[in-house]
Image 1 (cartoon, rainbow, N blue to C red):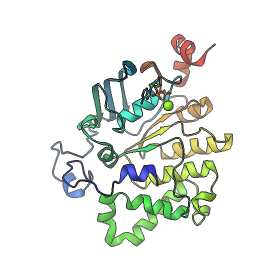
Image 2: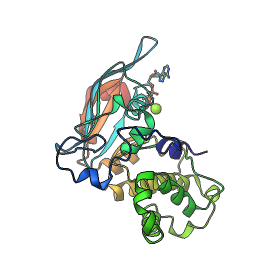
Image 3: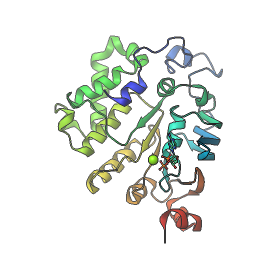
Image 4: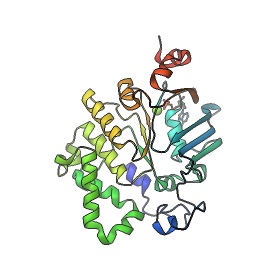
Length: 290
Ligand SMILES: Nc1ncnc2c1ncn2[C@@H]1O[C@H](COP(=O)(O)OP(=O)(O)O)[C@@H](O)[C@H]1O
Ligand SMILES: [Mg+2]
């Protein structure tokens, strides 16, 4: 089974959940009351972490981690193994409960009070290291299944599904550059193409924030640069946080002005442009090594 689709769309979700179907249009029209489930980005921030601490048997995997991501930003996070990068994503997605600290999506959605499926429905998509696609199904059907998993949207679209769903699938195929592979079985794709398909499946659920944990691991140089191009095309249409070690990939995403966060020992060691952080003594010592 597919981890991503399952996480974002539990079949037996509880309809009393206040965060169900966050974007139903009737709710959004009610005015600017802080409504449960609606992402309030009026202050320009999509994700906000403050003093987040996570301990495993007394060891602090995250130690008062504070960071925030702007709406539409593509943030790269680097740092040595064991820095707490994956643990941070586990906290954001509700997989790990922090001992203390704040985690907010927009101004009002307190993620520490939501479970994993509710957080996924609220608009956070997560890409794991290993691609998880439906190997026995064609590329096209993978995207269709991913869309149907987004129940709220699917329900509102049902009447017009054929045309609109088709257009959305075609648009996504173009973004992930798999137009000519639409009828092939996902299992026949190369590793890099599977990774792009999985991102496409996440996009079908219209995430507000995409989290990618070491997405280029195991990719060829060409596949790596193709993924960088894909994420650069997505820039602005959703906010993204990308954890990666591959510095060429990070450079391709961050450019000269993008913000890069360096984590070490569960907290932020440095923050700034790639050139800025590379010059910092603490970063050179703990990560880049020289
Ligand atoms: N479930 C867990 N139980 C115990 N220790 C863990 C668990 N998850 C992570 N850790 C520890 O927390 C630290 C941070 O790990 P991780 O977040 O995976 O770092 P990174 O992704 O930056 O390499 C590591 O020392 C790791 O061994
Ligand atoms: Mg990790």
